[in-house]
Length: 408
Ligand SMILES: [Ca+2]
Ligand SMILES: [Ca+2]
Ligand SMILES: [Ca+2]
View 1: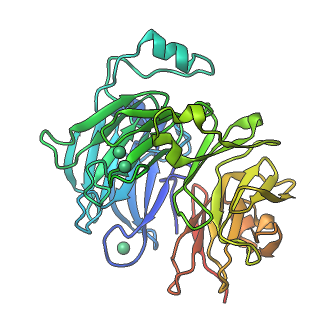
View 2: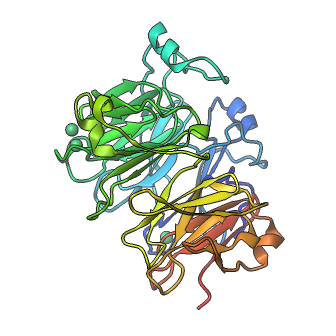
View 3: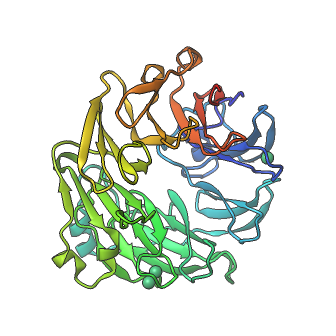
């Protein structure tokens, strides 16, 4: 399908936008020119497109040059069932306006100013540091939201609350609040990196991990992840089985990786008496998990480091490494359900020659020549796309997006 530059980088979400059972895409654009022209910050255009390339709706202002982005990372837009009524909506932030849009039509259902930022103390500046072009956020304005996530701090059983963050400020918004989208609580900290929500202490309400901060369901600070420095990745696994308790992995540059029992973070003074498992020797990216090896119990874990992929068993013992010279791996491998066997395969790099590899690091699926012909830069897995539940692969550049399914 044609993309016509409407997606900047990897800012595409696959979703059944109109509820007819077939997938569409949401493509987000960040154009510096448009941002300057109509006073926006990150997201400048959001387009719902079906897989024939027909535009269903568009918000913001499209730019002919979608590659001229002022923002290279992820843009603030998400498809989610915010009202818990099985009618998902699109949550997006244009400039300092957070919006909830009707997914089928793009019609604006509600909008509000993004929450105000919290003033920064000198103490906070001293802790966070000033190197590497890091800024604290504009002290006089509202949040320039860079991330959207969802949580359930009220214990409703559905993730209906919206988390917004600009990297230093975080707010949890109630979509049914009066006034509209009013914060339930706000938090200030070094929140750069991913946002996770889930029940860490078993009280039926979500805790939130954002950057270094571990927050209780009422917004109070439970703990700080000291090893989580800028550039680290955080991976959290809550699929507990007999030999796997909930794990929290912090990979931190040359220092290697720390593996914590995530539930330790909710205990008082946990950081003093809890010793994480330390994995040395190499730089690790985001960790993924899946059933990769039939000969080993439980699931396995995988992380990439430059051109090396490292496999771990269910207890985070290293079981193998494999080198992929010449390929640029993703910031974390992708687990793919591609064969009729229970074992999953891995997508390591956006490179045709790399193919799909198994839990031993061997290439078992060769990708078609079309991958190389189009020079796709962005790839993703579409979970459960096939009628039999198997996944599809999507690959795209600024002009065109293709979806690939297993051959048999
Ligand atoms: Ca659809
Ligand atoms: Ca909880
Ligand atoms: Ca709690």
